[in-house]
Length: 202
Image (tube, rainbow, N blue to C red; front, side, top):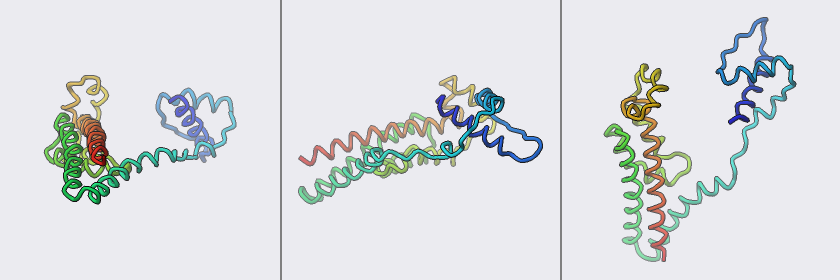
């Protein structure tokens, strides 16, 4: 976290130096004030190139992300070929329920909107097969659409988050709960459903 703040301080400092005009007004968070002030007063040279480079994603993460859904789908196909369509269908149904039910439970615990509950159950079996988007994103978007937070809740979120009882009354925090709890449910379902399918291979 410290390294991230320092890098951000250097980036902002360089942008201030490159700003045109006789006077520059900069609005920054309190956490950046000391670092920016130090960099400006000491006239430290800053190379902006490294600050603009986005670190590449680890190939191992990509392999893991796509490897799990490939393994699950491949296992279902193999079961269908070697054991028949009925066995493959039963495993597919187990996968749907194993992912959908825990995600649905997560949405229920978060007191999500009925449409959010249905979306959590239906989306989880499919989002579990792609590392691009999880059920938490889908469910949270639906909850945001049907129950958008009030402006007053945006202002009170910093105090509401300190009181767990208010997490369910503040619409913004409830969206966060939907995201977290449905994601946890889907993760549990992926391991349970995937384990069942893999054991069916033997």
